[in-house]
Image 1 (cartoon, rainbow, N blue to C red):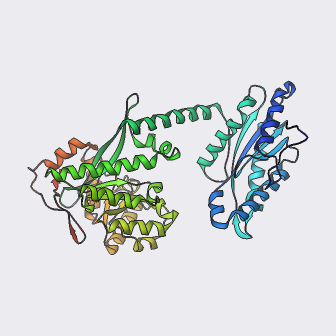
Image 2 (cartoon, rainbow, N blue to C red):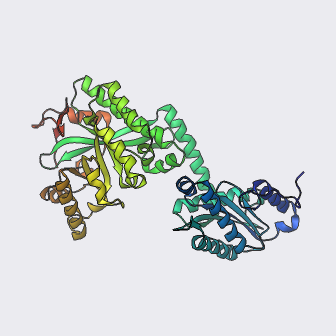
Image 3 (cartoon, helix red, strand yellow):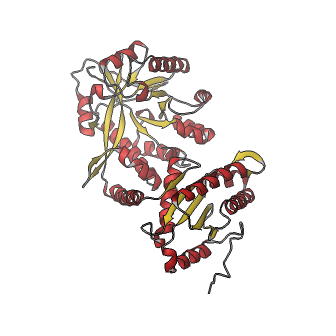
Length: 456
């Protein structure tokens, strides 16, 4: 039987391990006098520790853990317990401290770690994220302390590296709501509750419909039609973005193949792809297999990635893009200008188009700064010989400015709300429009493609 005099220690840091920390916390909770004291429980996690381990090796990772342990001992020498409770996670139980003191201790720990801890004697600082739970009368019950501090830690990591957040009851309610939403999303995927709407993409020179962007919607039985902004972040954290994203691609390919088989008007459909999807080693093969099985020309599928995808590993991204391009799949860089990717990447990637983010369009033509940025992007695109699509066009003045400065294509509410699949097909089938031509990818003809001219 484990006693207070015989704690079990973590072999790497020499701190208490998870078993010892739990035992110490349980003993603390069992003493009535301590229930009346103010105290604090801190949970600390090293930012990007798995990346550090993969890049420099386990021995370097262990030395970082030991350095962090030394920093914690220095910051809180009188702590009831300092423990390593996970791979890169630490917990600290501090007695007789109020919220202000706990904040000072937390800030000191984060500063000391950033200043002191180095990676393999390189000028690379290490940062951490910290969650704090206050204990005591009318505070969080001790039995929930570790969980509560964990929720605060998760909120800190969501806000960015080197952050500290205190637990509140609102955070618990938010966590419960996210948990319920995650369970609903899992059910939705199995019950086929997701839907696709389509936003037409318009050639600004001719008024033709030359493509569309597939937009995900969730037809929840109780919530109604839910837009992606309300659930995508939960899907990403729950590991559901891959299956949901794969469903979108397969559904678009299924619809495109059916249009071709029935001889219906067809234009390329764009799909947004997450970083997790694009960096999946099987992603390109999944696309290739889907096109092959459905006998679908790759030119009828466009994949849109953001600049954040490039930042993770440009060589992997380039390899995946080249593999997709061999099948004729069109590749677009979405939200161009809002990220931090190097322009040097653009000449190395088989891009078909750049998409100008709506934030640069919304104040046109009045904003001279936005106007200058858009003209610079259009000039760059002309030299790179890629198309440009402007998003979020809502007024005729915006469309006219873009058209006059050589923007190829636009999409937005100026031409109406996104359409259901049926309504979008009716739009394409309206042969009363005077312009019906073929859309082609570079050096390839896309069969069965028709354009529908619209007003605007």
